[in-house]
Each structure stands twice: as C-alpha cells, then as structure tokens.
Amino acid sequence: MGNRKMADTYSEPTPLDDIFDESYREKDGPKPPMIIVWRNVVLMSLLHLGALYGIFLIPSACSLTLLWAVLCFVVSALGVTAGAHRLWSHRSYKASLPLRLFLAFANSMAFQNDIYEWSRDHRVHHKYSETDADPHNAGRGFFFAHIGWLLVRKHPDVIEKGKRLELTDLKSDRVVMIQRRFYKLSVVLMCFLVPMLVPWWLWGESLWVSYFIPTLLRYALVLNATWLVNSAAHMWGNRPYDVNINPRENRFVTFSAIDLFAGEGFHNYHHTFPFDYSTSEFGWRLNLTTCFIDLMCALHLASDCKRAARDVVRSRVQRTGDGSHRG
Image 1: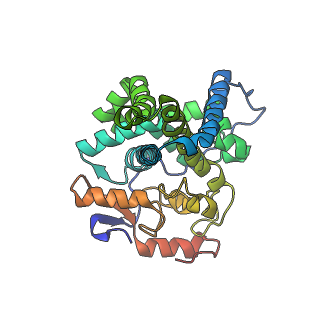
Image 2 (image 1 turned 90 degrees about the vertical axis):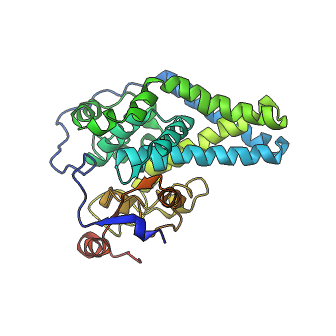
Image 3 (image 1 turned 120 degrees about the vertical axis):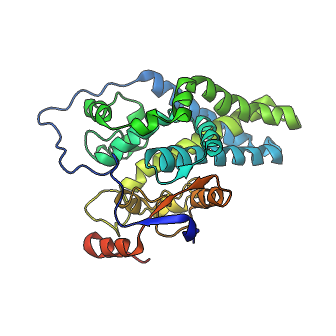
C-alpha cells in the first residue's frame, strides 16, 4: 500500500475545474462539420509505421539500447502521469522546483502537447466528460476517443469551455509557462535527440536502431498507453464507484504492460475522486506512479498528497456503485 503518512485524506475535494458539470447541455441542431487535419493524419501514420519497423529491429539492438528504451518510456510516462496529470491537471500533490523541472523535461519527452494545454484540455475532459465539450468524447466511438480526436479540428464547445476555465494556477507556475514558451525546442531535444544520440554516443549503437527503437517505438507506445485510458477505460469495464458516469475500471488497461506504470486503468475511481493523487484506492498495487510520488515525498521533493477518505469511498460505493466493488 502507499505511504499513508504522507497523504492527507479529504472528505470532499477542493473546488477545482475538473469536477463534472451536470448543468451543461449540448446544443440542439446539426453538429458542426468534421474537419480533418491531414498533416496530423500523415504524421501519425508515419509514426506508427516507424514504430512497427522498430519492432522488427529489436533483435538487432544491443541490450543497453533496449534498457535505455525502457528508461525513456518510464521517464516519458512520468511526465504525463505524475506531471501533467496528477500534479498540474488535478493538483493532487505539491512538488518542489527540482521535481517540477524534472517532470517538465519528462513531459517534453512524452510529446503530448505542453503542460498548460494538456492540463487545460484534461480539466475540460473531466468537467464535460462524454459530451461535445469533451476533447476525446468516447460517445463518438473507440477510434475517435483513442486517436481520431487528434486528427480533426476540435469541436467548438471544447474551445469555448476551455477558455472559460480558471487556469491561474498554471499561468502562475513559471516552470509551466517556460516549458510552454520553449516547447518545440524542448520536444526536439527530449523526445528525439536525447533518446537517439545517447545510445550512439555512449555505447556505439547505430543511429538507425537508436532512432527507431528508443525514439519512435518508445514514443508510439507512450502515446497509445495514454490513449487507451481515453478510449478503452471509458467504454468497457465495471463501475464500482459511480454507475452514473461513463469511465470504467478496465482490467485490460490496468494490466497491460504499456500502462502498468501509469496506474490509470482504475478510471471509474479517478473520475469519482479526481483529486486523489493515487488515482485508485489500492495504493501501490499496479500503480508505479504512486510509488514514484511516495518516493519523492520520502526525499522531501513532494508533499501534501490528497487522498479520498476511506469512509467517503465506502459511502460512495454503497450509494452510486454498480455492486462490483471488491476492495
């Protein structure tokens, strides 16, 4: 279990813009036309073709290169899960400047939009989940929720609702705003050059193998790990905490090798208690990001981890759950 002494329990979440807004209603009439962003279609197609080719190159890579690819995957995942998601989107814990700098560089290695934009869109996703204002609305099908939302222009409601959010906390964080200002440069450095050049420089791996395995294959795996939470975890699984919302506890996402580090498959819990730094009630179980945050607390680099009080969780299970809770 996670380190309970480092986590403050909360009976109710602090007021945030990630709480579902039941008052929102989709506009009547025809939907706006879907505008395909062909540049993104081409780039995503090339990325996945390159990643597929990288799989066939694995036997020719030395063991250090494969270990490096795993390390880059872990760092990238942390930039999303511990950084953009739990720290900046939900403010579920506090991080010192050194930790925020590390997570900002890790987030650039993940290359999923800068922290400010990622956090803004994620808060919109929570506030208007499965509506036209949700950036990756799972009501539009698996493909759209997984990757399709990146291949088309945003629905006007996503843009409108995003502009109305209170984002002062992000704007006042110098690490967030500096990363946003220099995001393209940081992505070139952290997502592409560092993963490719380190194996070539330190142990003589070919640039060809270094580009396709630690760079493209690793990047594609991190993307799809994140996308599975948007798609599969919003469509299939049980709802032990709140049967009235769409996000599910998805075993495939939870147990999949590429998402094990994130601990994001406990998605019904997360949308019910978005302020909880662990994103589940099970602490370290299948949730290595929680282990990382607890380690940072032990090193005095993180603090004030928020947790849903156990009695509140049990009450919610009895009141709104689907009866499948086994905690």
